[in-house]
Length: 206
Ligand code: GRF
Image (cartoon, rainbow, N blue to C red; front, side, top):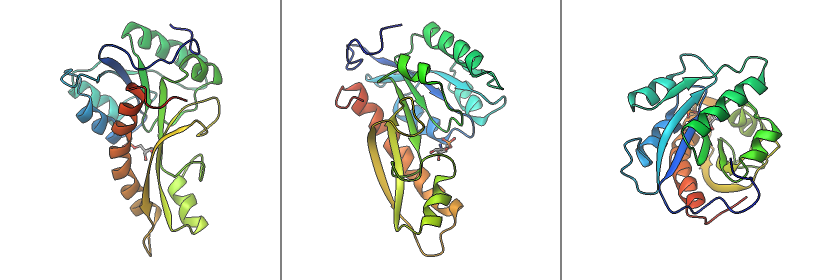
């Protein structure tokens, strides 16, 4: 693996190979697959690997349907063993950029450092507001009129890395967390491919 901080990782002079880590239904994986199909017809990038910490996650099925290697890597209480296997897979599939998409685990500062500039996440709020779990609930409880989503670089903190793309969503009277989260999710599906393009073209760096 390259020394993470030696040179800006992007742009590269060939199609980038992407991995997506997801814990659940994988709708962001779906939007990334539409933008960067596993079949490789998008010159900028192609998804080559799906990893989930949850056995039977719908995201793994989506990956398999796209004929991708889609592997369950148990997390359990052993973050180190998850990261060891995940990094083995990333090397094996020569992955250039990792997209966390509804991946509900916190990776170690060491992992974030080794993948500096090559590890992205999507979060359902306008960071730095409402970090952590249940961001739509937090937004409603805070009584804000606008929330949204952020695609950001991952650093050693939780939801603290530099923002790449943010999209706003207006709160409606009577909104509950499910309704708000649904409208935010629709914006995530636009924001994530856009952020990946910006990163791969070298237009933003952490
Ligand atoms: C998204 O709202 C994402 O922001 C959050 O988890 C959800 C994942 O949805 N971290 P999906 O699995 O991509 O459908």
